[in-house]
Length: 396
Image (cartoon, rainbow, N blue to C red):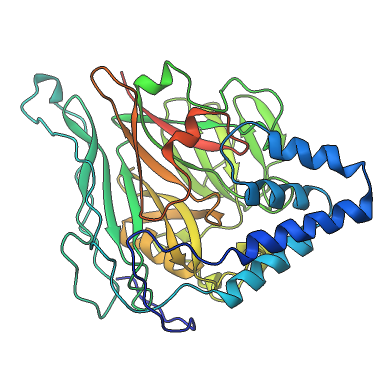
Protein backbone atom coordinates (compact mmCIF):
# COMPACT_ATOMS: atom_id res chain seq x y z
CA UNK A 1 0.00 0.00 0.00
CA UNK A 2 1.14 3.54 -0.71
CA UNK A 3 -0.17 6.30 1.51
CA UNK A 4 0.74 9.57 3.17
CA UNK A 5 -0.74 13.01 3.75
CA UNK A 6 -0.02 16.37 2.14
CA UNK A 7 0.01 20.03 3.17
CA UNK A 8 -0.56 21.28 -0.38
CA UNK A 9 -3.58 23.48 -1.02
CA UNK A 10 -6.56 21.61 -2.42
CA UNK A 11 -7.04 22.29 -6.15
CA UNK A 12 -8.18 20.28 -9.12
CA UNK A 13 -5.92 18.89 -11.80
CA UNK A 14 -7.64 19.18 -15.15
CA UNK A 15 -5.48 17.26 -17.63
CA UNK A 16 -3.67 13.93 -17.91
CA UNK A 17 -0.68 16.05 -18.87
CA UNK A 18 -0.44 18.63 -16.06
CA UNK A 19 -1.44 22.08 -17.31
CA UNK A 20 1.34 24.51 -18.01
CA UNK A 21 1.94 26.34 -14.78
CA UNK A 22 3.07 29.96 -14.48
CA UNK A 23 6.71 30.24 -15.50
CA UNK A 24 7.68 32.29 -12.44
CA UNK A 25 10.64 30.01 -11.87
CA UNK A 26 11.93 30.44 -15.44
CA UNK A 27 11.62 34.21 -15.45
CA UNK A 28 13.19 34.59 -12.01
CA UNK A 29 16.10 32.49 -13.17
CA UNK A 30 16.51 34.59 -16.33
CA UNK A 31 16.47 37.80 -14.27
CA UNK A 32 18.96 36.31 -11.80
CA UNK A 33 21.31 35.36 -14.63
CA UNK A 34 21.05 38.83 -16.15
CA UNK A 35 21.93 40.36 -12.79
CA UNK A 36 24.90 38.00 -12.49
CA UNK A 37 26.08 39.03 -15.93
CA UNK A 38 25.97 42.70 -14.98
CA UNK A 39 27.76 42.11 -11.69
CA UNK A 40 30.47 39.83 -13.05
CA UNK A 41 31.17 41.50 -16.38
CA UNK A 42 31.93 40.14 -19.81
CA UNK A 43 33.96 37.17 -18.57
CA UNK A 44 30.73 35.36 -17.71
CA UNK A 45 28.94 36.11 -20.98
CA UNK A 46 30.76 33.58 -23.16
CA UNK A 47 30.39 30.99 -20.39
CA UNK A 48 26.61 31.38 -20.31
CA UNK A 49 26.47 31.37 -24.09
CA UNK A 50 28.40 28.10 -24.10
CA UNK A 51 25.88 26.54 -21.72
CA UNK A 52 22.94 27.71 -23.83
CA UNK A 53 24.50 26.53 -27.09
CA UNK A 54 25.71 23.14 -25.83
CA UNK A 55 24.34 20.10 -27.69
CA UNK A 56 21.37 18.12 -26.50
CA UNK A 57 17.73 18.87 -25.71
CA UNK A 58 17.98 20.32 -22.18
CA UNK A 59 15.60 23.24 -21.64
CA UNK A 60 16.85 26.82 -21.29
CA UNK A 61 15.79 26.83 -17.63
CA UNK A 62 17.71 23.62 -16.98
CA UNK A 63 20.83 24.91 -18.74
CA UNK A 64 20.80 28.19 -16.80
CA UNK A 65 20.21 26.41 -13.51
CA UNK A 66 23.12 24.03 -14.12
CA UNK A 67 25.35 26.94 -15.14
CA UNK A 68 24.44 28.82 -11.97
CA UNK A 69 25.20 25.84 -9.75
CA UNK A 70 28.57 25.41 -11.44
CA UNK A 71 29.51 29.08 -10.96
CA UNK A 72 28.88 29.68 -7.28
CA UNK A 73 25.15 30.41 -7.33
CA UNK A 74 23.90 27.12 -5.91
CA UNK A 75 22.23 28.85 -2.96
CA UNK A 76 20.39 31.26 -5.25
CA UNK A 77 19.16 28.50 -7.54
CA UNK A 78 17.94 26.45 -4.57
CA UNK A 79 16.14 29.49 -3.15
CA UNK A 80 14.42 30.13 -6.48
CA UNK A 81 13.30 26.51 -6.68
CA UNK A 82 11.89 26.68 -3.16
CA UNK A 83 10.05 29.89 -3.98
CA UNK A 84 8.55 28.30 -7.07
CA UNK A 85 7.39 25.29 -5.08
CA UNK A 86 5.94 27.28 -2.17
CA UNK A 87 3.95 29.53 -4.50
CA UNK A 88 2.83 26.74 -6.80
CA UNK A 89 2.65 23.35 -5.05
CA UNK A 90 1.05 20.43 -6.88
CA UNK A 91 -2.75 20.42 -6.56
CA UNK A 92 -4.53 17.87 -4.42
CA UNK A 93 -7.77 16.02 -5.11
CA UNK A 94 -9.33 15.26 -8.45
CA UNK A 95 -8.72 12.37 -10.80
CA UNK A 96 -6.38 11.89 -13.76
CA UNK A 97 -8.31 13.12 -16.79
CA UNK A 98 -8.35 10.18 -19.15
CA UNK A 99 -7.74 7.79 -16.28
CA UNK A 100 -4.75 5.50 -16.01
CA UNK A 101 -2.69 5.87 -19.20
CA UNK A 102 -2.89 3.26 -21.91
CA UNK A 103 0.50 1.91 -22.91
CA UNK A 104 1.85 0.68 -26.21
CA UNK A 105 1.72 -3.05 -25.58
CA UNK A 106 4.07 -5.53 -27.18
CA UNK A 107 2.73 -8.92 -28.26
CA UNK A 108 3.76 -11.88 -26.09
CA UNK A 109 4.23 -15.17 -27.93
CA UNK A 110 4.91 -17.89 -25.36
CA UNK A 111 4.60 -20.52 -28.09
CA UNK A 112 7.79 -19.22 -29.72
CA UNK A 113 10.26 -22.19 -29.72
CA UNK A 114 13.05 -19.86 -28.57
CA UNK A 115 11.01 -19.15 -25.42
CA UNK A 116 12.02 -22.35 -23.67
CA UNK A 117 13.50 -21.63 -20.26
CA UNK A 118 14.54 -18.33 -18.71
CA UNK A 119 12.50 -15.35 -17.71
CA UNK A 120 11.37 -14.15 -14.29
CA UNK A 121 7.82 -14.52 -13.01
CA UNK A 122 5.53 -11.52 -13.38
CA UNK A 123 5.74 -8.91 -10.60
CA UNK A 124 2.83 -8.63 -8.14
CA UNK A 125 -0.14 -6.40 -8.86
CA UNK A 126 0.32 -2.89 -7.47
CA UNK A 127 -2.39 -1.50 -5.24
CA UNK A 128 -3.64 2.10 -5.14
CA UNK A 129 -2.86 4.31 -2.13
CA UNK A 130 -4.57 3.21 1.07
CA UNK A 131 -8.17 4.31 1.27
CA UNK A 132 -8.64 4.65 -2.49
CA UNK A 133 -10.47 2.29 -4.81
CA UNK A 134 -8.41 1.30 -7.85
CA UNK A 135 -9.08 3.11 -11.09
CA UNK A 136 -9.55 0.92 -14.17
CA UNK A 137 -6.10 -0.41 -15.07
CA UNK A 138 -4.36 1.03 -12.01
CA UNK A 139 -1.47 -1.12 -10.83
CA UNK A 140 -1.80 -3.61 -13.67
CA UNK A 141 1.38 -4.62 -15.48
CA UNK A 142 1.48 -4.37 -19.27
CA UNK A 143 4.25 -5.82 -21.42
CA UNK A 144 5.83 -3.08 -23.55
CA UNK A 145 8.94 -4.93 -24.80
CA UNK A 146 9.65 -8.58 -25.47
CA UNK A 147 12.69 -10.71 -26.23
CA UNK A 148 11.96 -13.89 -28.18
CA UNK A 149 8.30 -13.34 -27.35
CA UNK A 150 8.87 -13.22 -23.57
CA UNK A 151 8.01 -10.13 -21.45
CA UNK A 152 11.25 -8.21 -20.98
CA UNK A 153 9.87 -4.83 -19.89
CA UNK A 154 6.57 -4.28 -18.10
CA UNK A 155 4.96 -0.97 -17.12
CA UNK A 156 2.33 -0.13 -14.50
CA UNK A 157 0.85 3.14 -13.24
CA UNK A 158 -0.37 4.17 -9.79
CA UNK A 159 -1.35 7.40 -8.11
CA UNK A 160 1.40 8.73 -5.79
CA UNK A 161 -0.66 9.03 -2.58
CA UNK A 162 -4.19 9.54 -1.32
CA UNK A 163 -3.98 13.34 -1.67
CA UNK A 164 -2.39 13.97 -5.08
CA UNK A 165 -4.98 11.86 -6.83
CA UNK A 166 -4.87 13.62 -10.20
CA UNK A 167 -1.26 12.58 -10.80
CA UNK A 168 0.08 9.27 -12.10
CA UNK A 169 3.46 7.67 -11.41
CA UNK A 170 5.11 5.23 -13.82
CA UNK A 171 6.73 1.98 -12.67
CA UNK A 172 8.95 0.04 -15.07
CA UNK A 173 9.99 -3.58 -14.43
CA UNK A 174 12.93 -5.10 -16.32
CA UNK A 175 13.85 -8.77 -16.57
CA UNK A 176 17.67 -9.08 -16.34
CA UNK A 177 17.56 -12.54 -17.89
CA UNK A 178 16.35 -10.90 -21.12
CA UNK A 179 17.90 -7.41 -21.03
CA UNK A 180 21.28 -6.01 -20.05
CA UNK A 181 22.01 -2.58 -18.57
CA UNK A 182 24.68 -0.01 -19.38
CA UNK A 183 25.60 3.27 -17.71
CA UNK A 184 26.10 6.05 -20.26
CA UNK A 185 28.01 9.21 -19.29
CA UNK A 186 26.93 12.79 -19.88
CA UNK A 187 29.30 15.06 -21.76
CA UNK A 188 29.27 17.42 -18.75
CA UNK A 189 28.53 15.03 -15.93
CA UNK A 190 30.83 13.25 -15.42
CA UNK A 191 32.50 14.47 -18.64
CA UNK A 192 35.92 13.24 -19.66
CA UNK A 193 36.54 10.17 -21.76
CA UNK A 194 34.50 6.99 -21.69
CA UNK A 195 34.00 3.88 -23.76
CA UNK A 196 30.23 4.49 -23.80
CA UNK A 197 28.52 7.10 -25.96
CA UNK A 198 26.60 10.07 -24.56
CA UNK A 199 23.65 9.22 -26.84
CA UNK A 200 22.19 6.08 -28.39
CA UNK A 201 24.28 5.08 -31.36
CA UNK A 202 22.73 3.87 -34.59
CA UNK A 203 23.59 0.27 -33.67
CA UNK A 204 22.22 0.61 -30.13
CA UNK A 205 18.91 1.93 -31.43
CA UNK A 206 18.23 -1.53 -32.88
CA UNK A 207 18.34 -3.23 -29.47
CA UNK A 208 17.42 -0.60 -26.86
CA UNK A 209 14.20 -1.27 -24.93
CA UNK A 210 14.34 1.19 -22.01
CA UNK A 211 16.20 4.22 -20.66
CA UNK A 212 16.09 6.30 -17.50
CA UNK A 213 17.94 9.16 -15.83
CA UNK A 214 20.94 8.87 -13.53
CA UNK A 215 21.38 10.57 -10.16
CA UNK A 216 22.22 14.00 -8.79
CA UNK A 217 25.05 16.07 -10.19
CA UNK A 218 28.53 14.89 -9.24
CA UNK A 219 29.51 18.35 -7.99
CA UNK A 220 28.94 17.18 -4.42
CA UNK A 221 25.14 17.06 -4.50
CA UNK A 222 25.08 13.26 -4.81
CA UNK A 223 27.34 12.76 -1.77
CA UNK A 224 28.86 9.86 -3.67
CA UNK A 225 31.18 8.74 -6.41
CA UNK A 226 31.15 7.47 -9.98
CA UNK A 227 33.01 4.60 -11.65
CA UNK A 228 32.43 3.38 -15.19
CA UNK A 229 34.37 1.00 -17.41
CA UNK A 230 37.67 1.43 -15.60
CA UNK A 231 37.40 5.21 -15.16
CA UNK A 232 36.97 6.61 -11.63
CA UNK A 233 35.37 10.01 -12.20
CA UNK A 234 34.66 10.62 -8.49
CA UNK A 235 35.91 8.64 -5.46
CA UNK A 236 33.45 6.06 -4.19
CA UNK A 237 32.05 6.71 -0.70
CA UNK A 238 31.55 4.01 1.94
CA UNK A 239 27.90 3.57 2.88
CA UNK A 240 26.55 5.54 -0.08
CA UNK A 241 23.60 4.11 -1.98
CA UNK A 242 25.10 2.52 -5.09
CA UNK A 243 23.65 1.24 -8.34
CA UNK A 244 26.11 -1.40 -9.56
CA UNK A 245 26.20 -2.95 -13.03
CA UNK A 246 28.19 -6.11 -13.65
CA UNK A 247 29.88 -7.37 -16.78
CA UNK A 248 26.87 -9.58 -17.53
CA UNK A 249 24.62 -6.49 -17.60
CA UNK A 250 22.73 -7.26 -14.38
CA UNK A 251 22.12 -4.58 -11.76
CA UNK A 252 22.35 -4.53 -7.99
CA UNK A 253 21.75 -1.85 -5.37
CA UNK A 254 23.14 -1.49 -1.87
CA UNK A 255 25.27 0.47 0.55
CA UNK A 256 28.83 0.61 -0.75
CA UNK A 257 31.29 -1.76 0.96
CA UNK A 258 28.43 -3.24 2.98
CA UNK A 259 26.02 -4.89 0.55
CA UNK A 260 27.91 -4.15 -2.66
CA UNK A 261 31.62 -3.61 -3.24
CA UNK A 262 34.29 -3.52 -5.92
CA UNK A 263 34.68 -6.99 -7.40
CA UNK A 264 36.26 -8.23 -10.66
CA UNK A 265 32.92 -8.28 -12.48
CA UNK A 266 31.84 -4.74 -11.51
CA UNK A 267 31.77 -2.52 -14.59
CA UNK A 268 30.05 0.60 -13.21
CA UNK A 269 29.04 2.16 -9.89
CA UNK A 270 26.73 5.17 -9.65
CA UNK A 271 26.32 6.49 -6.11
CA UNK A 272 23.57 8.81 -4.92
CA UNK A 273 22.66 9.79 -1.35
CA UNK A 274 21.86 6.98 1.15
CA UNK A 275 19.80 3.79 0.71
CA UNK A 276 16.07 4.45 0.48
CA UNK A 277 14.93 0.83 0.77
CA UNK A 278 16.95 -1.83 2.59
CA UNK A 279 15.84 -5.36 3.48
CA UNK A 280 12.46 -4.41 2.04
CA UNK A 281 11.94 -1.52 4.49
CA UNK A 282 11.77 2.18 3.66
CA UNK A 283 14.47 4.26 5.34
CA UNK A 284 12.73 6.04 8.27
CA UNK A 285 14.84 9.18 7.68
CA UNK A 286 12.72 9.81 4.57
CA UNK A 287 10.62 11.93 6.95
CA UNK A 288 13.40 13.73 8.78
CA UNK A 289 16.70 13.45 6.92
CA UNK A 290 18.71 16.47 5.80
CA UNK A 291 20.41 17.38 2.54
CA UNK A 292 23.11 14.75 3.01
CA UNK A 293 20.40 12.12 2.94
CA UNK A 294 17.93 13.42 0.35
CA UNK A 295 19.34 16.53 -1.34
CA UNK A 296 18.82 20.25 -0.94
CA UNK A 297 16.61 21.12 -3.91
CA UNK A 298 13.32 21.62 -2.06
CA UNK A 299 13.52 19.16 0.82
CA UNK A 300 12.48 15.55 1.23
CA UNK A 301 8.88 16.42 2.17
CA UNK A 302 8.22 18.34 -1.07
CA UNK A 303 5.90 16.65 -3.56
CA UNK A 304 7.82 16.96 -6.81
CA UNK A 305 9.11 14.88 -9.71
CA UNK A 306 11.39 12.16 -8.35
CA UNK A 307 12.88 8.91 -9.58
CA UNK A 308 14.32 5.81 -8.00
CA UNK A 309 15.68 2.36 -8.79
CA UNK A 310 15.80 -0.93 -6.94
CA UNK A 311 16.09 -4.69 -7.21
CA UNK A 312 13.66 -7.37 -6.11
CA UNK A 313 14.38 -10.60 -4.25
CA UNK A 314 14.32 -12.61 -7.48
CA UNK A 315 16.59 -10.16 -9.32
CA UNK A 316 13.95 -8.07 -11.08
CA UNK A 317 14.94 -4.45 -11.71
CA UNK A 318 12.48 -1.63 -10.96
CA UNK A 319 12.53 2.03 -12.04
CA UNK A 320 9.99 4.49 -10.62
CA UNK A 321 9.47 8.00 -11.99
CA UNK A 322 6.71 10.52 -11.68
CA UNK A 323 5.33 13.77 -10.26
CA UNK A 324 4.06 14.81 -6.83
CA UNK A 325 6.34 12.39 -4.95
CA UNK A 326 7.90 12.85 -1.53
CA UNK A 327 10.95 10.77 -0.65
CA UNK A 328 8.78 8.54 1.55
CA UNK A 329 6.19 7.95 -1.17
CA UNK A 330 8.91 7.12 -3.67
CA UNK A 331 10.25 4.56 -1.21
CA UNK A 332 6.78 3.13 -0.60
CA UNK A 333 6.15 2.62 -4.32
CA UNK A 334 9.52 0.89 -4.70
CA UNK A 335 8.65 -1.29 -1.72
CA UNK A 336 5.19 -2.10 -3.09
CA UNK A 337 6.83 -3.14 -6.37
CA UNK A 338 8.81 -5.82 -4.51
CA UNK A 339 12.07 -3.89 -4.15
CA UNK A 340 14.29 -5.16 -1.33
CA UNK A 341 17.15 -2.67 -1.89
CA UNK A 342 16.54 0.66 -3.57
CA UNK A 343 17.73 4.25 -3.89
CA UNK A 344 16.57 7.67 -4.98
CA UNK A 345 18.02 8.86 -8.28
CA UNK A 346 17.12 12.39 -9.34
CA UNK A 347 14.68 15.21 -8.55
CA UNK A 348 13.18 17.91 -10.76
CA UNK A 349 10.96 17.64 -13.85
CA UNK A 350 13.87 18.74 -16.04
CA UNK A 351 15.76 15.54 -15.24
CA UNK A 352 13.37 12.79 -14.14
CA UNK A 353 12.79 10.72 -17.26
CA UNK A 354 11.97 7.14 -18.07
CA UNK A 355 11.06 5.77 -21.49
CA UNK A 356 10.60 2.50 -23.32
CA UNK A 357 11.19 1.79 -26.99
CA UNK A 358 9.70 -0.42 -29.64
CA UNK A 359 11.19 -1.14 -33.07
CA UNK A 360 9.33 -0.45 -36.29
CA UNK A 361 9.72 -2.64 -39.39
CA UNK A 362 11.03 0.06 -41.70
CA UNK A 363 10.88 3.36 -39.81
CA UNK A 364 12.71 5.04 -36.95
CA UNK A 365 12.73 3.82 -33.37
CA UNK A 366 9.51 4.61 -31.48
CA UNK A 367 9.87 5.90 -27.94
CA UNK A 368 7.20 6.31 -25.27
CA UNK A 369 7.23 8.42 -22.11
CA UNK A 370 6.79 6.45 -18.90
CA UNK A 371 4.32 8.79 -17.20
CA UNK A 372 1.93 11.60 -18.24
CA UNK A 373 3.36 15.09 -18.25
CA UNK A 374 6.96 13.86 -18.47
CA UNK A 375 8.97 16.80 -19.82
CA UNK A 376 11.93 14.84 -21.18
CA UNK A 377 11.02 13.19 -24.47
CA UNK A 378 12.44 9.76 -25.41
CA UNK A 379 14.18 11.49 -28.33
CA UNK A 380 16.38 13.22 -25.75
CA UNK A 381 18.56 10.11 -25.73
CA UNK A 382 19.12 10.21 -29.49
CA UNK A 383 21.32 13.30 -29.11
CA UNK A 384 24.21 13.93 -26.70
CA UNK A 385 23.07 14.12 -23.07
CA UNK A 386 24.69 16.53 -20.64
CA UNK A 387 24.12 14.16 -17.71
CA UNK A 388 24.57 10.43 -17.21
CA UNK A 389 21.78 7.93 -17.86
CA UNK A 390 21.03 4.21 -18.12
CA UNK A 391 20.01 2.17 -21.14
CA UNK A 392 18.82 -1.43 -21.27
CA UNK A 393 19.29 -3.57 -24.36
CA UNK A 394 17.99 -6.94 -25.50
CA UNK A 395 20.28 -9.86 -24.85
CA UNK A 396 21.35 -11.75 -27.95
